Each structure stands twice: as structure tokens, then as C-alpha cells.
Image 1: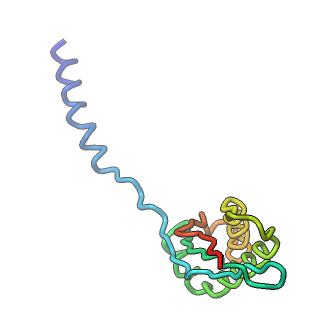
Image 2 (image 1 turned 180 degrees about the horizontal axis):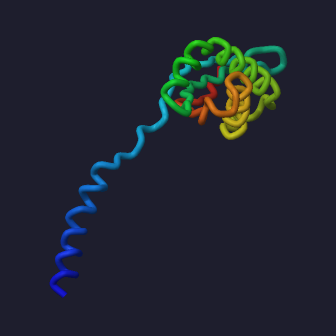
Image 3 (image 1 turned 90 degrees about the horizontal axis):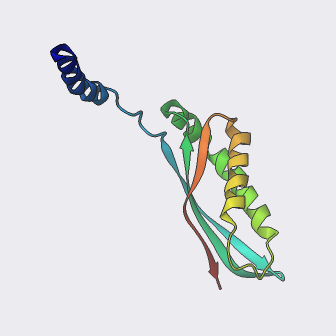
Length: 131
């Protein structure tokens, strides 16, 4: 019985030490994307602006250099998507559908970099500014 108690005590001391050595991996890197200001046009006249600030999460640190190298290409794809998507909105829509926008931006990112580089597109800010 004393042997079992001694073994349990030793395990209780060793388990936290083992856990302290095993650290969680760092979160995937984030890359800031410059703000997009997309005009909202209704009836041929500007009625407002969609202002969207994004970050993208990449799968690992080496991908950061790859994304930064082709950031202009990604921004161009995002800009085209946002102009196309927001141009199809009904003029009386008061909110932005962030789920649809996120899905479209992630699709564009996959087309630019492939399926494994970009983990997620994250919104920092998304607002519709009326004139």
C-alpha cells in the first residue's frame, strides 16, 4: 500500500512538470490588409461607402513572406470582389452581410495563394457609411 501511495505521489509531482514542458504552438500569424473604401452607388449616384478593414490568418510563419510578396495581387482580388459584391446590393439594404463577404474573400484568397496558405479572413471593422 505504501508503494502505491508513493507512486501516486510521484505521478502527481511529475505530471505538472511534464505539462509545463509541452507548450501550445503559437497561433498562426496575422497579416494586416489596408482598409478598403468601396463606394455604394444607387440610381447612378453615390449613396455611401462600405469601409472594411481586414486581417488574414496564414497557416505558418514561412507563408507570411509569400503573402507579403503578392499582397498587391491579393488586394486587387479583394477589391474586385468587394466592388462586384457591393455593386449588386439592393440600395435599401441597411447592413452588410459579413458571412457572404467573408466567404467570398476567402475564396479569392484561395485562388491567389492556393488552399493551404490562408487559414481565415478576419474582419477588424466593417461599416456602411451613409451620405
